Image (cartoon, rainbow, N blue to C red; front, top):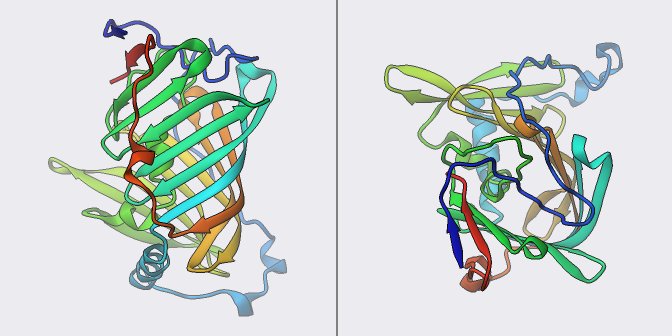
Length: 281
């Protein structure tokens, strides 16, 4: 087994057929302007809720505490400038709080990728390339002329309550949604850490953005069509984007189940024989 520790442009070749990622990634500042989903004149004001930041955080904590794990079959779509379209596959999605994730993608009865995060380290295995990309979770990563998907980013997206731990936040109230800005203290300064967008109609989180240390967007997710299951509610679809690499991942859940007891082995990764190990941070 070869361990590659040289600094070279890393290419995360997620799907050997037909995708080869070779595009150059650039940082993009977060300059998006919030827009209403409906013109104000069409909003039914009787359905708008009026909550304080404390009440919203309590609601998020209450909803989040109902879910300890999520297991589901999924449909997956990946879109990048290099794909000249979209790549689709199906697979299995398993999440356990806090921050443990396993997603296996299949296409025509062949495993095209296997991603794992145990909360401390993550692995992304591409069988046809015989390559494993691995690194520490929630740390700065080397991204050079490549498109990346990070399992540790995906693992935190459904744990909204964790966003507030040890951090400061303030609330913006818009006609149809709330926006919560979350800041982390670095020395004598407060720097952007994350941002939540929450519907004032039903208190559901519709968007989550996490920022890098330089305050540029690290990852952005939108959550659509929540459904109620025994034990809690989850979105039917999650769209995840990495602006730095112009990559978008859509995950649609099919027949999900909540709060199953999951074996620890699910989130343990065994390095395949004869695979190249590329460490990216």
